[in-house]
Each structure stands twice: as C-alpha cells, then as structure tokens.
Image 1 (cartoon, rainbow, N blue to C red):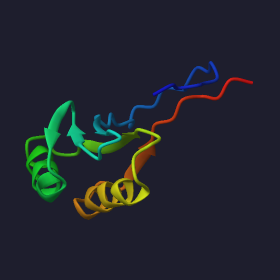
Image 2: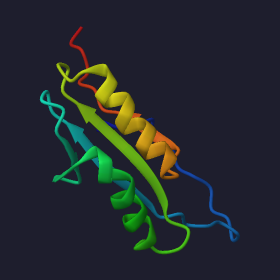
Image 3: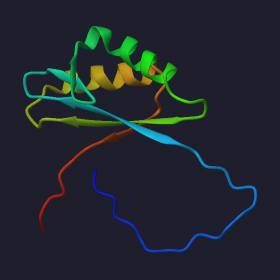
Image 4: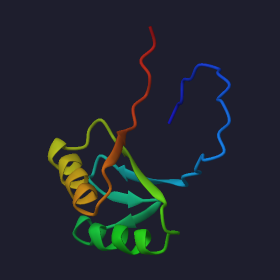
Length: 102
C-alpha cells in the first residue's frame, strides 16, 4: 500500500491516546484462492479465522483489511470476501491497486 502524505508537524496534547492499528492482508488470486496474511484459507472458514485473530489482539486494537485481488479474479469472489470481512466486524477496508502511470 502506498501512502501519499503531506509533511506536517502535529501538535502535542496531554490527553492524546495511542490507537494500535493492525492491517490484515487478504490476497485473492486469479483462481479465486484466498490468502490471509500469506496463509491459504477457505472462504468458508475465513470468518472463523478473522474472529480468532481479533480475539488474540490487545483490547482497543483497530483492525483494517487490505484486500488485494488479481485483476482476473471474478468480481463475485471479491464481494464474497468483503462480505465475510464486514460480517466479522472489520469495517475499515481498503482495496489495493497499482497506481496508473500518467
């Protein structure tokens, strides 16, 4: 994932709070095989894997899903994975794309 940012200096605050964020990487290849953090997983058990992962994280950890799908992956497979991710309680999703050259 590429982060484009503007260089700024944030102000300090005594009541500031650190939120730990953990990205879960979902990869879907052109044969519709799904991988969670590099490990193959069946779509039917994906929700259970996400729930178990969430339970292993410290309280207050913010989970985000980064979904990378081959451009030849059937649309329905991508939608199915997104649906499982959302049903598992992860509401922050990003679709990984390659920047087009201008």
